[in-house]
Length: 148
Image 1 (cartoon, rainbow, N blue to C red):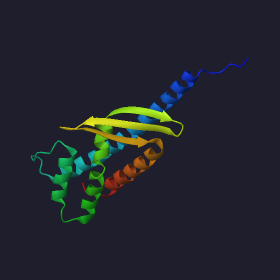
Image 2 (cartoon, rainbow, N blue to C red):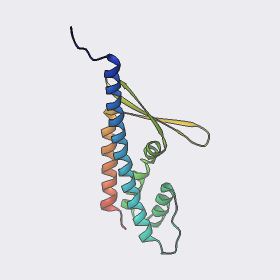
Image 3 (cartoon, rainbow, N blue to C red):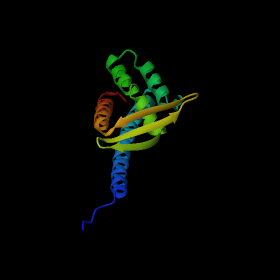
Image 4 (cartoon, rainbow, N blue to C red):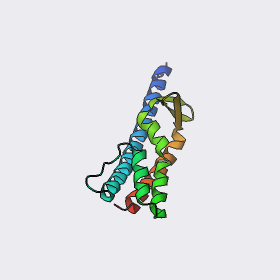
C-alpha cells in the first residue's frame, strides 16, 4: 500500500507557496517605489524654500519637481521614467490581491477602485522579475542622477 499525499493538501501547499512568492515580490516592489518616492521628496525639499508647501501625492511631487528642473532634460527623463511606473505602484499599493495557480505558475490579480470604475491589473510569476528589475533600474537611476 502506498502512502499518497491527498491532492487537496498538494494544491493547498502549491497555493501557499505561490501566495508567499507573490507577496514577497509585491513587498520588494513597494519598497523600491518607497525609495524612489523618498529620492523625489528629498530633491523637491532641497529645491524649494523652507516655507514652501510640498504636495502630498507623488504625481504632484513629480510635476512640481519637473517644473523646477524643466531646463534639464536628463532630470526630466528620470522623472518621466519613474512617473511611467506609477500605474504599477497604484495597483500594488492600493489593489486587493488574489493569487491563482495552474501548472505554469501563479498569477496575481490586483483589483482596485477608481472614482467610477473597478480596475484590474495582473502579473504572472514569469513577468514579475522583469517588472522588479525595470523598477529597480529606474530607482537606481533616480538615486544616482536626481539632483537634490
